[in-house]
Image 1 (cartoon, rainbow, N blue to C red):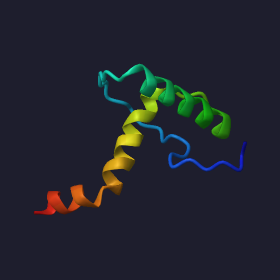
Image 2: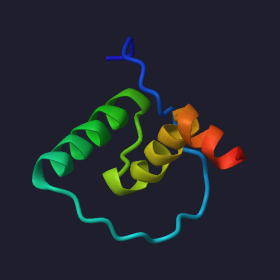
Image 3: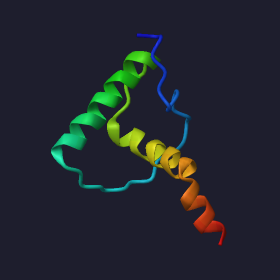
Length: 72
């Protein structure tokens, strides 16, 4: 499965901050699937909750409307 590329690479070493988020069951399943695939690719088990902050960072970094609104 090494030919698959995900937007989130190996996790950096950093101390996480706790955040509680409620998601619907379908999204929880998708996040667990992503975490499993990430572990298969990178060889390190990681929880979905550890990936969510990186997903949010990537989302915000890619949202040009957010960046423009933040500047104004």
